[in-house]
Structure formats: C-alpha cells, structure tokens
Image (cartoon, rainbow, N blue to C red):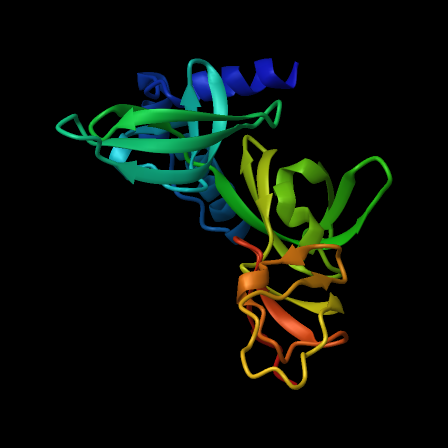
Length: 244
C-alpha cells in the first residue's frame, strides 16, 4: 500500500501543474499576518515539491531521490566511467525506498532522469525500540516522529542520544535519513602498540563502542582502548582523536 501511495505521489510530482492551480496562485493575495505568510509559503513549497523536474544522467548525485520504471529510488553511489570508444556512462547504485533492496544501473550522461524535490528537516534522535523503530523529535515543535531504522542504512549504528539527524520527506512521508558526517566514538577494542619493533604495522584493527570495525589501514598505532576518536560515517574511516 505504501509503495502504491508513493508511486501515485511521484506520478503527480512529475506532471506539470494544472492551469487551475497556477491561476489560484496568481490570484492569491499575500496575507499580512505571520501565520498567513507561513501558510502561503507552505503551499508554495507543496506546489514546488509536486512538480519535480528532469535532469541529465551526469547531474545525478548521491542522496537524490529519482523515479525509474514506476519505482522510487534513493541514489547511494555514483561512478563515472568511459569504456573504450563507447559513450560515457554513469554507474549508479540505487536503494528502493519501499523494499530497501539495492540495484545497480547505468545511465547515459545525456539520459533524461526524473528527479523530485524532497524536504529535508532536522530532528533529534531520542531512542530506538526492539522493533527496529527509531523515535525522533522535532526540535522546534517537540512533536515526535517514528521511522524505520532501515531509513538510516548502515549509519544507524552511529545513532547517539540527542544527535541531530536529517530526514528527507516527500508529502510528509519519510524517505531516508542520515547522521552527521563526523561523529565521535569510543574505542572498545584495539591492538596494543608493538614495542621493540622498528617498523610500524601497516594495518591495525579497532572496534568502536557501537560494534563497528573501522578501516584497519587508517588506524594509527597510538590509538588504544578507551580513546575517543572522530569517525567519517560515510566510509567508516578514522579521522583523528577527539580534541579534549
């Protein structure tokens, strides 16, 4: 049912606004009150959100929400390639918003792709339950929003109390969510420094307090258990020790 509603919403988004809607906006008088102006701005945003637009394959970026073959996808990875004398293509990894399944497709750089505006809104992470649900709070209105943990993908492991997260919505329906690019974590397991050895090992294993194993090739030998470190959540790599 949710998939059907989303497909209908995106179908409307990709259609040009009717003359009646355009006429109603042209004839609308701007209200003088703050509440009235906010309502009008909300209506304008709703209209823009419904219209959507087309872009070339070369303009597709990670995080974009697009429609392909009546399915709604979030772009999770983009790779540019040029094979021999053939036309340059874009290899994209897409996550089906409804099922969570990932597929890989190739786009021509000049291929027309249907993209839709989505609203991005900040929330505060509160907690998660045993049913893989995440409870968020709007910092302005204090209203609560419950979303599936899978909206965060693997980044759900980085969720921390009072963390500011971003949620992408279309027609008030959450499509995806993300954590900050940089987060601090505590090292739970790490190989101790090897004394008496001149050469520094090229690789070192470190496990964080959230269970994530960070890239061993980028963990310096001086990192030990209990250290607070800064991690890049996009590739799970070590950045630096957290400053006191």
